[in-house]
Image (cartoon, rainbow, N blue to C red):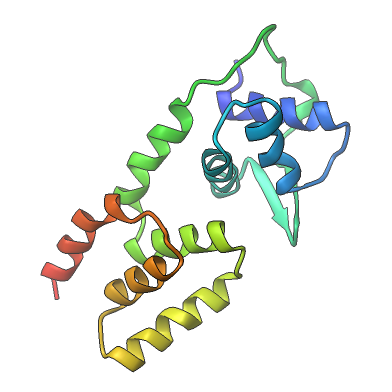
Length: 160
C-alpha cells in the first residue's frame, strides 16, 4: 500500500493530467478546490514532500519522484491531517531552528532562500545579535508563526 503522501500527490497529478505543475497548481486544489487542507497546511505538505524527495522541484515546477500513474487511489479517498501534524512536531526537533524560520519565511513570502539569509545576516551585523535571534526578528517582521520554536530556541541559546 502506498503512503498517504504518495496517494495525495498521485491524486493531484492524475487530476491535472500533467506531469509537471507549479506549486500553486498543487496547493490551491488541496486547499480551495478539494478543501483537504488550509492554504498553509497545503504549502507545508508540499514543502515536506520536496524534503522527503517525493517531489522534485526545478525552478517553479514540481513533479513526482515516483511512478504516480501506478498509485491506486481508494474510492472516496480523503486524507487525514496526520502527515502534516506529525511532520510539524518532528520538524522543530529535527531541524535547525534557523532552517525552520527561514523555510517559513520563504513559504509565506515567496522570497528566495538567499534573500532571507541575507536579511538575517544583515540583522546580525546591524544589531550584534545571535543568528537565532536575528532569524526570529526577521520572521516576526513577516508575521511568521514562531510560538512552537521558542523552546528549541531557548535550548540553543543556553548552549552559547
